[in-house]
Amino acid sequence: MPGIYIETFGCQMNEADSQYIAERALSAGYSIAERPQDASVLVVNTCTVRDNAETRAYGRINHFKVLKAADPRLRLVVAGCLAEQDRDRMHRLVPHVDAVFGTRELVRLGDALAAWRSEYSEAQAPEEEERDLLLPLGGSADCITGAYSHLRAFVTVQRGCSYYCTFCIVPHVRGRFDHRPLGEILEEVRRRLDEGAREVTLVGQTVNAYRDPTGSADFSDLLETVAAFPGLERLTFVTSHPKDFTPKLAQTLGALAKINPRFHLPVQSGSDPVLRRMNRKYTVDEYRAKVAAFRERCAGWALTTDLIVGFPGETDDDFARTVALARELRFAQAFTFVYSPRRGTPAARWDPVPAEIGNARLRELVAAVDESVVAFHRAKIGTTVRALITGPSKKDRSKLAAKTLDNVTVIAPDAEGEAATPRPGEPWLDVRIDAAHRWGCSGTIVGRAARFEGQARRVAPPVVDLIAG
Ligand code: SAM
Ligand code: F3S
Image (cartoon, rainbow, N blue to C red; front, side, top):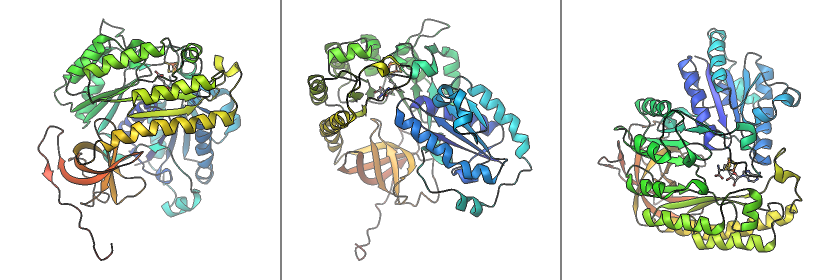
């Protein structure tokens, strides 16, 4: 069976799109390859939100050139935001690419995969070793792999964004809001649960602005309806806009037991003049008030955010306010970025903050954010958390990685040799937390469960070889 290898850059929208591509490929008769050298079709699902993501995607597309040169039957496909943005010049920049599908052409990509399938039935991939030698070493983005990816379903509830923040390329490459009909969303959730999903993530650029185009349901109604699915174990969502955070949503979050206790609410800056120039549609005080309303209903939840430094015109005082806000609100996690000019957006035409100042500000902000992040992780030491497995740790395959309900990475030694024999039937790990780090927590697996609410089977702790140390 021909293999398809899918690499994903960027946000959860792209994760959701990659899952769609994988699903279409599986039903057309492909298998999911875990390595590019084992595939007949390579898909690079790209992101263009910052320059760095764009450069990395082009790096990967170039990286695959040797495989393509060695086997002309191999197809290299570029999908996602970069495909949308650079469609006209991609054939010039990377002529070895076979096909380009923009963010609104995923169905066409699925159809193309089905059409290409017959060409591969008799196809013989080059010797595996030969391909291993061909492919130069290099990093990779997240790839869709077999054993555990079905446990988490990313379900798109809305495409595009109509808010036009002055720094953001998303509305330009993905278009304005296009909310998906409620019935279609529910149908996909049902299908994913039938396929073994334990956790559903509802994704969109501003999910809390959701409006069912076929009825009157808003985002709270959507959450309630999805949470009522009998087979669903956990429900979560990204990303929300502060403007659309309502008392009704705070109440829904506090009331639905299946929703993961994690809320991502990007603030971007702690300075009103900067927020205004960013066209964020709220002030710092309004953001504070929303956080207070959220924390009242959802005590103990992880509040996470996105922050940008070095936005055009950002003064030392503006920046100091961002650092102060991060200290005040004590985020459980914050994704911090230096502003990256994006062609065609208003802010790209404004006077830039020098790169060295932007980079120094980023370092200072990261240090401030780290304090609350590590404190959040440290509070877990000594407790036992139930976390959904993601697979062997990428850095050390003798360990397993999992995510807690509040989205903290936990790593623990693989006492039962799972890296060799995956056990997705028991995907919930009970992990005793022994240590806290910037990136998450490490601990010891003490139990495993088939269901989130289920009884755990006890797992014997790994045997420590005292002689070897
Ligand atoms: N919809 C989300 C929201 O409510 O703000 C944002 C989606 S955006 C794809 C993810 C994050 O990337 C943003 O929150 C912002 O912090 C960051 N980002 C977007 N454009 C950027 C740019 N030009 N430079 C630096 N960071 C950027
Ligand atoms: Fe981008 Fe702002 Fe929408 S960050 S995705 S334009 S809310």
